[in-house]
Image 1 (tube, one colour):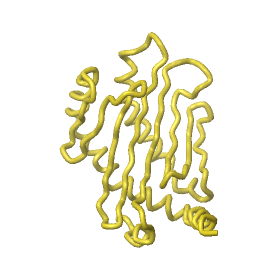
Image 2: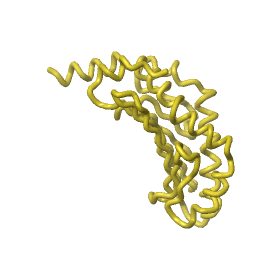
Image 3: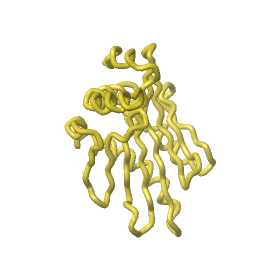
Image 4: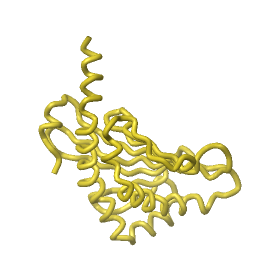
Length: 187
């Protein structure tokens, strides 16, 4: 369970965000890239060109288990594939933003949204275990995802439990970095 002490020591909610990007064009850009942010500080990033998880904060590398990382990537790939399959004539990109926010009073707010070429496409409602399409083109994928109860339970678990747990792990490994930043701001 999330350690309330860590949150109480901070005046603002803690936020963990995973920013993922898929690009469908050949070129120098990686096909897939991901950045994980803790309170607007990059914890680590990955891209398909280097195929390496690079930690920006000392000690976090041990908290990023490849097993968890790869499972998460594979699950999100199904969304990307469904979106990209319909659009192959020019370069396109799919952006996925997921994460959670933990407030001082304890509640966690998790989110998972998908954009296609910079426009809202699909989002997940973890309370009702259903997907919300932002555009008519997302209806087919929405129906497919709504029918996958196991996948929807997985995302609910990720947003409500795994995300706050990961946040706590990253924060514990990052304490010295955040403390240095806080000290510098106070000077």
